Image 1 (cartoon, rainbow, N blue to C red):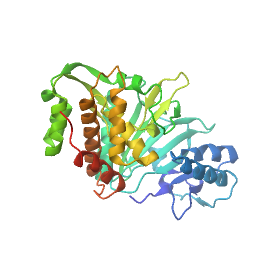
Image 2 (cartoon, rainbow, N blue to C red):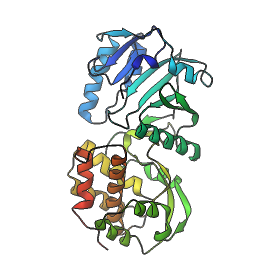
Image 3 (spheres, one colour):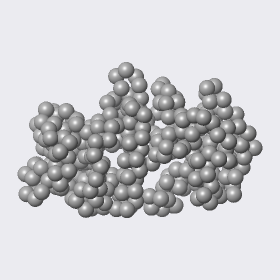
Image 4 (cartoon, rainbow, N blue to C red):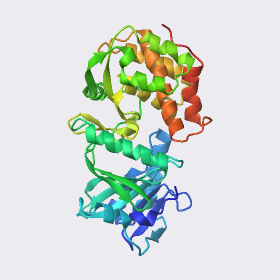
Length: 348
């Protein structure tokens, strides 16, 4: 996707790009100091070194040290899409997603007084549109308060756009172990009653994809009891979780979700993803840590074989999603995940 940034801004808007116009990741209006500082907060950063870098970028943007370009005089496509549901829309901050077939653009929508009104995601390539449609489906079915509220979905320009409410709260710190409130959120996503493993919808789906023989033992380790269905987020990581002022957690970015997921898979993914991207742990060490963590949660009642099986299957599930997005098998994350389910066998 080539991001045509001026499609997202009102014509005539003076726009800054971070970190630079040669390598743009975040676009924001050249508003007065406080608005620039607040808008640049959307620049993504989870690791400590990345947060320091973001601070320097925000400071340079807020103090006027970045060059501004002017949005063209054509139509404001984003404004045309949102005007019937957010008539108070006045300005936007635009984040370009990770380059690749599943790349999307996310725009934070603000009123004249700076209040965040919602978020718009835009996709034009087929894999990205598929993810956007899946998020549309998930937001339509989520329990109230677990995620954003769907406002609008439909065509925009050469692609499709999804508009949702702003979920209140602050992003979690990207640390381990999982902080307070994560288990309570996952409990809200359990859908009783329990089912035998062989008829569980998630298991049937993963088997239909051609489960590698090495993972058959993982399913065998789970076969001695019944399991509930879970609404699975699919990208359950600290940077997609927000804590409200009352301490309750909610989740954003449901594009990898499914209403027919497997319980505890999201928590295993949380530990693996944070271990890989934040702590840079080796995959087998991270998998062992995840399994041990799951067995220490008495409410789950998992034995070591079940916890290990869930960890391996979570790595494989994430690996499949990466393939669907067009990620190369040689990328860091795909290689990292593959080592977990290819180089060890589940104990039965």
